[in-house]
Image 1 (cartoon, rainbow, N blue to C red):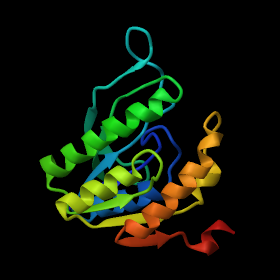
Image 2 (image 1 turned 180 degrees about the horizontal axis):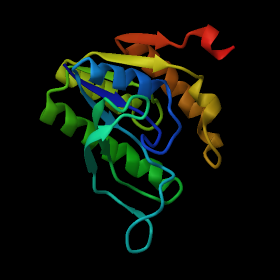
Image 3 (image 1 turned 135 degrees about the horizontal axis):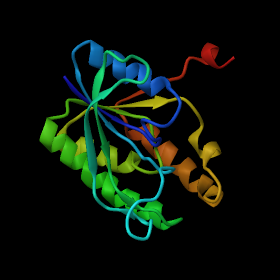
Length: 178
């Protein structure tokens, strides 16, 4: 099975998260796992340090939680200027998601994000007849980082929309957060 995970963190630089354990376990079980991440805090590249719109594809990436796993990490480019980065990411992530769906024949999507690519993911999944599972770990609108705090109400609206349009929601185990 070809499974696409979509996250709003830097896959390789963030600490090991739930998504690492889940995706890597599926890889070890023999599934082809693809990750679309959002490396917002990486050092600036390019002539002026404003980023690039080029998508990077890293194949055979060893797992973070389990080194026996092997994943493909896709990093859509974006312009690294506040506010512009979000707008450019909306477009580049949409294009990357559609490319991955078509190129790799994705069978299922596990969505961990809302604001950057939740709507795009669900619309593309519906277009291609792919089920989407949303892994709900937090109230994302409460985690909107500075300087984007003013977008918290928008994120809340997007969360509600995503919840209504995904095929399944996997909530966090409340005991694990005590």
